[in-house]
Length: 99
Image (cartoon, rainbow, N blue to C red; front, side, top):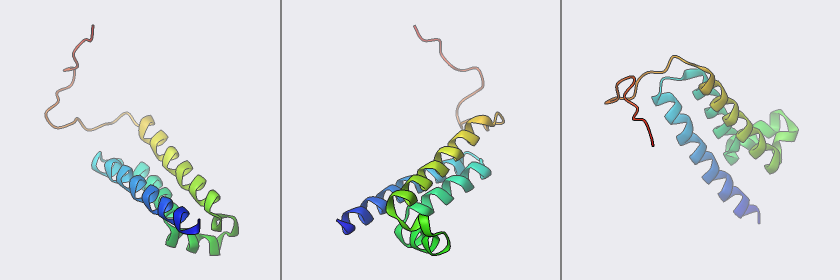
């Protein structure tokens, strides 16, 4: 069971890392930092290191919950910022009215 949990943590950490990379590509450095911290806490080696510094984080459930909370906080901060760089190939106001 321990191996399965570590596998899930690796997969979740990598997926959250790709989300953090997307924030970096969008130019959001503070949300990227929060999301990267969340992704790293989920990864088993970094989670074990954090568990040595803060004992509750050493448990799998707490590390996963903390990681997802940091990623959600990063997403919230990214949603609060209004100074977005336009997506290449898209001009402002080019949204089509849906029917």
